[in-house]
Image (tube, rainbow, N blue to C red):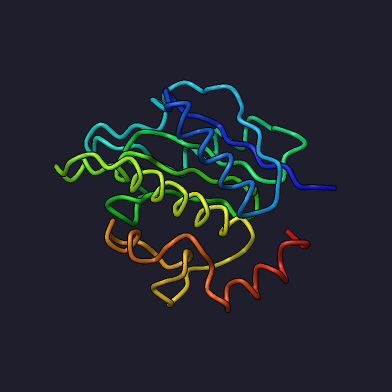
Length: 180
C-alpha cells in the first residue's frame, strides 16, 4: 500500500505553493499527499521579544491533532521560526512523532530585500520540505554540502545544496524507509 503524507497549511498559505509542494513530494517520495484544512496562525508559538515563532510548539500542536492514516505530516507556515538554540530555522521535525514544519518566510527573496523570484522560492520550498521530511525518516544532517540533508545556516546553503539526497543518505533512506 502506498504511503500517505499530509500537508497542513498553518495560517494563510497560497494554494499554488501548496499544490506545487504536494506534486513535488508525491514525485520525490512516491507517496500520495493530501492537503488538510488550514489551521489558524500560530499565535500560541509567538515570542514577543524575538518577534518569531517557536517551531517546537508548532510541531507539538500538529502532533496533538492526532491525524490518523498519515505516515508523515508537514506543516507549512509563513512566519519566521526559531528554536531556543538558534536565532532562526527554516523548519523543524520530530523524528519519533513523524511531524515536520517549514517556514516560507526566509525562503522568499523579499526577506533579503531582493526582487521576487517565484521559481527560486518554489525550489527552496521543496528543498526545505524534503529536508524536514528526511529527518522524520531518521536521517541526520549530512556533511556533504550538496545533499538536501546538509544543515542550512543561511539561504545560500539552501540554494547550494539542492533537493536530492547524496548517495550515502540515499542508502540510509532506502534502509530506513520501511522501518519508519
